[in-house]
Structure formats: structure tokens, C-alpha cells
Image (cartoon, rainbow, N blue to C red; front, side):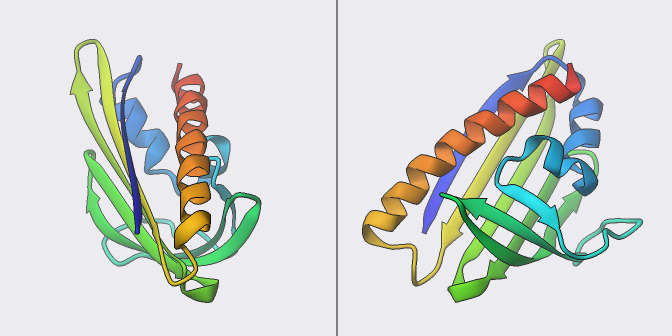
Length: 143
């Protein structure tokens, strides 16, 4: 399993960051691996909420059946899912106040039978770049 964690300081309040990262409808605006939702988004999100979306790394889209594993308003959202070919993905977003702005810790994991060897290395490198781009997009969204 590949796990990538990145902590970044953002020039907006924790409340504003939480509003952006916890609104699944806004994921297409900043989270680069998220391509689209295939299911309707629920009016309210909570522990156990299920949604279906398409995620893509290395230009390999995969339909993921997501489940909200942690929903701690306004601090943390953790979501995980399974896709085609046994791919497993998880994303954790933890928000906290930090100085005049906020701190966001993003942890993403990718696993499954197909994510081994050279493909695992390529996915890890691409995911790190995707995460950097996503965080830059988020910073623009909340500025």
C-alpha cells in the first residue's frame, strides 16, 4: 500500500478550509484525482455516507464506491473506497487553526493487487504531484 501525507499552511480560516474540503460538490474544483461524481450527493454527509465517483491517477480512471469513515465537523473527514480490479483508495483531510490561517493535513493511500512493483512507484510519484497541485488549487479557491 502506498501512503502519502502532506501538511500545508493555508491563508484562510479553518472554517473556510473545512467548508471547502467537506463539500463534496467542490472536490472537482480543487482535488485533481477526483474526476466526477456518478451518484447524487446527499443533502447531508455523515459517518457511513456512501457515494460513487471516478478517481484517476496516471490517466487511469477508476469508479470508486466511497464510504465516509470519519466525519468530525469541523476538523476531519476521512473517506475510503474500492474500485475496479480491487483498487483501494482512502483520503483523510484534517483541518486546524494555525496562526492567522489554518493547517491542512492530507493523507491518501492507494492499495490493491495491481498496485505493486513499478506501477506502485509510478502511482506514488504521480500522486505526490497530484497532491501538490490539489493543495495549490485549494489555496486559490479559499484566497
